[in-house]
Image (cartoon, rainbow, N blue to C red; front, top):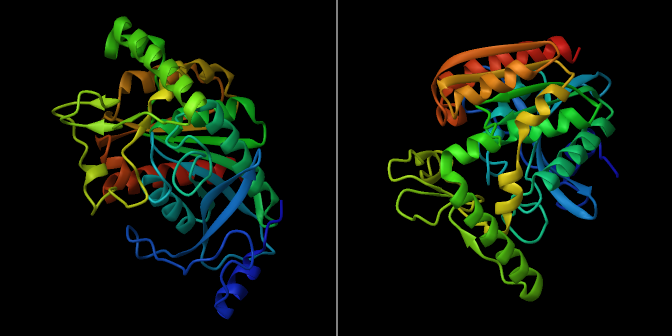
Length: 335
């Protein structure tokens, strides 16, 4: 893997040359949530098992390539892309002194992978390992951490339980299911129906290339993965919030089996690195967060805030609370 230096990217930008190196540059952007800080952002790409994965790399504005900086992989919710909540955390963490790589998982956004919108915990684990490899190869990074928002709190649990290169872990509003939660939410009969539908969709894709999808979120379509007439999904559908053009409200039906098998709670006891969890009573399934926390065996910290689950995606008060706690914890344990 060739990793261009930051100086290479800035030189390309100055010349106005695009596509000269893998992972084109983009202009620096200031974080809209915190105008007192500043950072640089550039688009990068890296390989994972032959696939090209896309990311946005956020760095402190006055980064010194002769120095060594703590670095973090940042990823977001189910079906999300790097331009959504993970990007907000990447920006603010860079303003707090971190090199932050925000990724599009394979099958999503600008990353490669067929079928599209495939929810595969195994693939996401491989993606995260490749992201760690990318950060490790940068000459100005030192210890690497993982920051997972919502579902990526669970994906991150798989990573830190398996990859000794990751030295600290942070979750924000983590979604941490297990088989008991799934059965309580939808029942055994619905679980069986979804598994059968997933198997049929997988077979159809393998035979004909035809992909079956349903909405990921809906207040009026009962076929959606997350159907709730009272659901507060404004974050995803409001273009002023997370309704960005890069995001698709689609879930590959063939994902049902792997998604139902997703069990980050089972990984908690295997996590041996310092871990901080940011959660609230208004976040998804606070009892699951407390269960996960109780099973952690290493140094751990629980920051219990206020606000709803989606507040932690883009609301300044909740993001500031989360980043304040996460940054302090990670600076201590990635030093």
